Length: 116
Length: 113
Image (cartoon, rainbow over all chains, first blue to last red; front, side):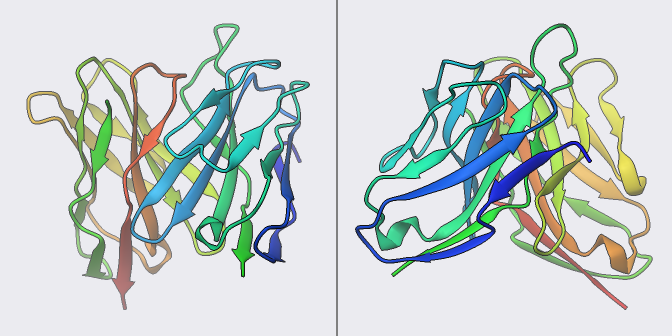
């Protein structure tokens, strides 16, 4: 089934550790995004990539980095995790090119991260 | 800068009653508007969207929304809710249909039997 796969689904991490959340899509969408979801704050954009090889900062980029080496993969790295990064992280994609744009975001199932 | 306000954080409603979830946005340019639904322990999925044309937009599961440019609103409505509509609903805005999408804080809809 086509879609977005995120891993891990859940992780408990000690503060100061490095962590990479993986995101892979098989829809050949050119744009990908990372959001964090926190109660009462909705979804906040961390980083995005409009096409392979380019990335940009969202609303809350500090403490996170991303890379987009190819169309399908968009990993999110926490170089040194802190408790305030405890959240549910969602990867999303959109097909924003080639005249097929619908404006719709397609989401993964989320990765629940707890930093102690 | 774009922003989205959802005035009601929680909305309880009895089964088969109508519901309206409110959404207001701020932007200095033309926008595209979306409503997403999130069922428990799942990702978000699109309910409906406004890109252009008719200001009344119909989506899945019997939901509809009306774009009001003068009031900068995009309220979501359903004439008769079901238990299965219990979920978190997010309003979202982007300045182009494939630019960064900004989400509101969400409204938790609880349908009471």
